[in-house]
Length: 155
Image (cartoon, rainbow, N blue to C red; front, side):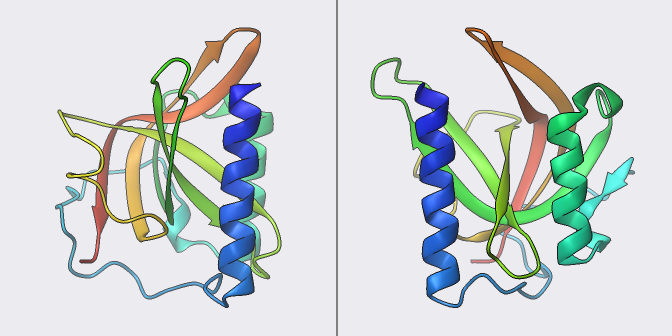
């Protein structure tokens, strides 16, 4: 139920961005607040068109076993949610389709020690995340995430 609230919150964020015209693709990250090492990746979503990347992320959500352990790089809009009951924090990169009407979010776990909000970008900032695809369960529900992730953004 709490994850459904997160998904709804992330969806509202995307709708707000689309309403403001901010749903269009932005320039590639050139000067990052944090350096993302140029490590090889198995799947680079930053090189795909809006329609293709949205379809690829949809497939990742529906066929997660096909992506387990792969190193993924993606661009998205930074989003945050805190479950007030458990105090668990969730961080995600939201990817909209080409028309910015639909969105998928992939949660990430930034490697190292980082505190929110001090070490993170402002909400809705364009970020690049590179991490290892993994799944986990909360209750009866399975979720996908990028673990051991590097995160970069423009300041």
